[in-house]
Length: 336
Ligand SMILES: Nc1nc2c(ncn2[C@@H]2O[C@H](COP(=O)(O)OP(=O)(O)OP(=O)(O)O)[C@@H](O)[C@H]2O)c(=O)[nH]1
Ligand SMILES: [Mg+2]
Image: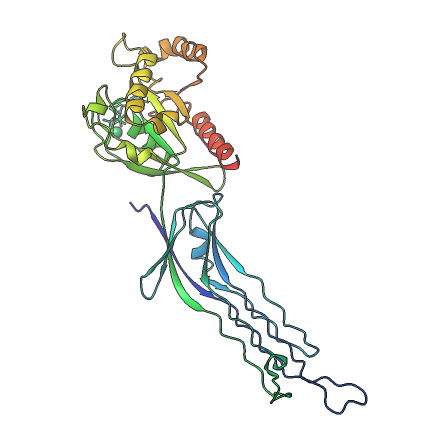
């Protein structure tokens, strides 16, 4: 499976406008001075990052990005018009390279960040600029400079929006396999997942978000128990966490105790992680043991001010509601 999104595009900045050769013509003045204006600057091609874009898909169908030339200079010292820049919008996290040399040009890491990939040519100077005491009537002007052009490669490493946490065996991988095209190994024993998996979740008509399934955490993870905390850095840049709980194993399991114990491990590992908002789901409600206690657990969480989403990753029950909640929360965070 590929989690690198790539696009190759051609960018060409506008050429500068030529400078103008012109002389003043006035009544009764046999030979006026030079008054040719400068040419305008050609438009740049600028790459700009936007948080509202999540893939490079648009650019695969729209490869050529060409800015307009600057206007020619005119008589009466009128400068040519500068041309507007052409913007190419990319998601945050895009790496820009020169396609020919492979040279890395920029790493776009923040919303609104800009990088000029092709600089517009400067306009040529008009003949008015070349007048000197010895040459009062220069008959030449400069040509505009050519705008830069090249092929560039864009690469986006997908960053997960949502990280799934929970004890081993609660159904994290089952969940991601149900809501995305990701197919991690699923089995009824702890530590089935040994390295993180990413899945792209589609919802609505065209929207997507990326979710990361990481190995299960256990008590003492911060001391290296289980697989420890070594995969937690993979979810350090996510917007929030999906915390999955499972009370089906034995009748003494309390969802709240598991919830607190995982959060305790998170806090010990990284204050930044525990600060992240969490959406909490109770999985396996298709099993009678879980179903019976679902209401009780939900009302307990509610008292703590937390909404518990009952789901079954196997039958799909409750998943739509949960996905919409995740999508809504992501949207709100993008806007704010
Ligand atoms: N009945 C039922 N079983 C489920 C559900 N979700 C997962 N399971 C089962 O629970 C077991 C563990 O599922 P996984 O998805 O591998 O759990 P995990 O959380 O990824 O586990 P680790 O990767 O080991 O941390 C498997 O046998 C699944 O079939 C569910 O909604 N209902
Ligand atoms: Mg797993």
